[in-house]
Length: 296
Ligand code: NAI
Image (cartoon, rainbow, N blue to C red; front, side, top):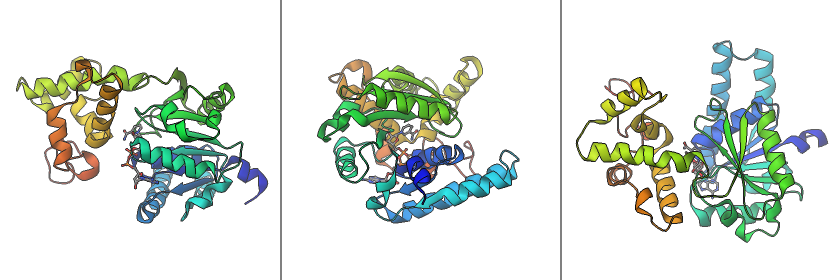
C-alpha cells in the first residue's frame, strides 16, 4: 500500500445491508476499501457480495470493465480490527446499539491516525452519545446513508455537540465527491428523515391493526395515489423490521416515550418471530421464488 493510497483508504465496519452498500459507493468513487465485521464469515460474504454487485454493473453496461477491475483490486477484507489502522475514514454500520457502537469507537480511536475521520451510519442514536467515551470527539460525525446506499443520493451529515466544523465539512465534501447529496443537520432524535418518517410507518401499522386494510392495499394506495415510491410495508421489509423497529424505539425513548412516537405492536411481533423482511425471506410479505409477495 502506497502513502497516497493510505491517505485515501476507507474502512467500513459492519458489513451487512448498509456496510456493503457504503463500501460499494466508496470503492466506485476510487478509494481503497477495507471491510471488517465482527463475524469473519460475514466479512467474507460481504467481500463476495460487493464483488458480484460490481460484476453485475459491468454486465448491465453501467460500469466499464477496466474501472471494475481497478475497483476489485482496491477491495480488501480485514481479518482483525487492527488492520484498519491505515484508514483515513472509518464508516461504521454495525448493530444499532449504543454501548456496542461506543465500545467499537473507543477501540478504533486507539488504532487509527489522529487525522482519521470517524463516522457512524446510525439511523437514530445520538451522535453525541456515541462519541461520549472518545478522547477526541471533534473528529466524530454522523454520515447517515439511506438504503440502498448505492442508489439513494441523500446523506445526512450529523454534527454532535463536540463535532468540529472541519470534521463535518470533511464528511460533507466526501459525500459530495461520492456523488451523493449531503445535507447537514444537528444531532436531534431521528435526525431529519427518520423523525419525519416515523408517523408514516406508525399510522400505516395502526391502520393494519384496525383491520381497515391489508398491507398490500395500503402500499398500493400510497404508491399509486400518494406519490410515494414504496409503501410503508414493503419499505420496512427492505429496511429490515428489526432495524426499523430499533429506530422507532430509539426516537420514542429520546422523546421521553412520547405517545406521538410509540412503537408498533404488530412490528414487534414480526421481529420476535424472525420475520425481518427481505433479508430473512419473510416480513410483511414473503420473498423468493414461488411466493405471491414482492420479489427480492
Ligand atoms: P445489518 O444487521 O445488516 O448489519 C450489521 C452488521 O454489523 C452485521 O454483519 C454484524 O455482524 C455486524 N456487527 C455487529 N456488531 C459488530 C461489532 N461490534 N463490530 C463489527 N461488526 C459488528 O444492519 P444494517 O441494516 O446494515 O444497519 C447497520 C447500521 O446502519 C445501523 O446503525 C442502522 O441503524 C443503520 N442504517 C440502516 C439502514 C437500513 O435501511 N437497514 C438505513 C440507514 C442506516
